[in-house]
Image 1: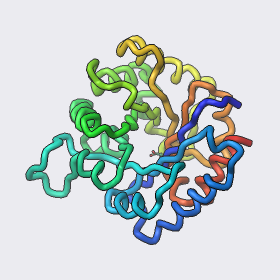
Image 2: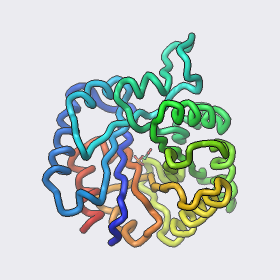
Image 3: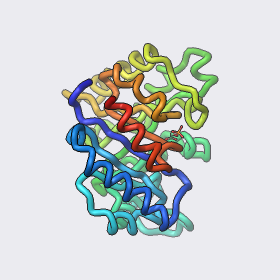
Image 4: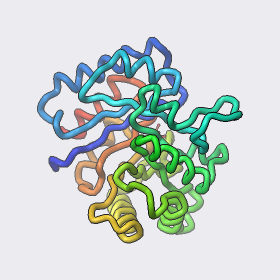
Length: 253
Ligand code: PGA
């Protein structure tokens, strides 16, 4: 088990209301109590925009931070009904933001738009969780590395402040399906992503890279053997304090 800081990031998706504060309370209480590994991990909860302000005011925590799940590509107020700028989310209390999630890509987000969103979020000094990943079809036809390379290079600019960008490798075929990549494949993919980032963006240290897709308390332990994994983006299992806490506990078991 490595002592490197690991991220446990929850993606609540379209879930939660004001009563869900109790889930956060329980997670925060766990982080406070479970001292053994506390200095080794960080918890971020990316909740619906409607809850960021409320949660971040109610929970003043050294261990739990809040994030948003998407933003508009423009960073100025404008006539975009239903949309939010990165600055509005920051102003509500977000410190992190998920961008490029495959569910948003399916709804039409292109690499080019994601690039503009990343730039807006960087201007607002938000930490970005930039999601990349291949579909089943791309995996079957051996295109995984090509797809990841394209997603990285089309959406990150050379001038970006690289330390603000955390990559989340989330194969689309694994999200919400219960399917998990093999350890061997994951090790190769993580090594490839980190090499690609160092090579293209000339950073001494690679960006942090997380894994996401069908994580649970039952399968988290297999990731302990992959030292390149800097943490996890957790969807369904982050909507329950018990399931989320089990993931942290079982990772360190
Ligand atoms: P899942 O979702 O953990 O429910 O598969 C992950 C995600 O969409 O970020």
